[in-house]
Length: 505
Image: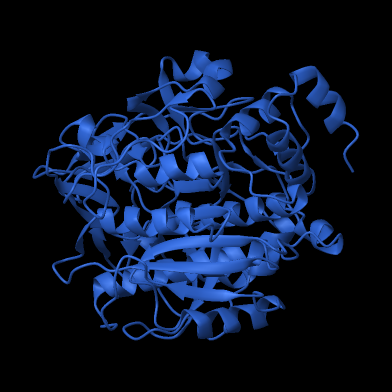
């Protein structure tokens, strides 16, 4: 998961544990804790530990930012002519998921709140969203609030770390709003130290617990993750689950990006890739919905010219040249695989032939390909103001947060942990699940003193669930209604649900 700069790649990011303090479970405030609610959610046993007192992590944004600012949002034709890759305007992404049908029916996310969590935030996010909205012909969100419940964020300074998080924030806000223009936006900014982006992860946990316990939103979007092997031992990871346990108990949906390195991921040093398949956390957490990425194939009006495929630009020379500055291969693909820490949750029993005894990720996917990047606008200091095609699971995650907000509106309440509903919809072959059957997340790269070539064999898209895209992607008009209905009737039998789904509008 990297922040891409013009010509060269900046430091590889994501969330990597730098250390943790052992001891009894305590809250971010230092008080002893116990699990909120029942010990099992949707068949998922939860750890009783909450958050260690002072783990330190390295957090960087989980996006890939294409170089070069544009005065106006570049068209698909412009990107294809000049860069040999596709890029899409916000209206095309909407049309790609057939969202205008929902908007015309008044389903815009009205009355719902999307919570976006980012370190630092962006000093220009409100202005830049207004520019984005003007291009996309969108109204401003009914409410756009910014809070800092874990402590005051230091004044903005233009450097790689702050610019990277500012770009992540802008992407998250703009594309959550693009998908659910009637939803409120709550941007939760967390403070991090000036020491090369190092911060205590309890700040994020504290901020998210504040949101959950004060009922500030129905869906939380997170665009950061870490390889599970970054943690010295499983207990250190398990001690950081407090916000997700609270969210599951209080009916809040939590989403996390599955990563941008395909079946590989970065090691603790932040720049070296594992040479065998690994997965990342929090997306591997059974109480979190892991979001992968697909490649959309759209015409200038946004209508699909073919079905979505797994996002994998690893072997696309033009994409590598534009993003990385060489012809590749470089790991540029949707993350996915089997957890090394979490056992298979009950809701994945129907796909046990693929996940085995382990939790599999992702759960579902949205647009995130670099060859098919989303145009975003930014104007913070340190980079030229303008439009930037941007990609990665950081794009896919806020997009799916918008989809969840639409479903929350239909259901008239937040849906909470939606994973059981996703797998049930897939098993029922519901029309709202758009199966992805093309591509894989196998990646190839060079590393080491001898520049040795490594290939990490990933997972192919197959009919039904797979470890590259999860259950697939969405046909929004059907999916939003189906998700709202199934998640609201958890005790109904599959036969009864299938019959009811056939009668939905």
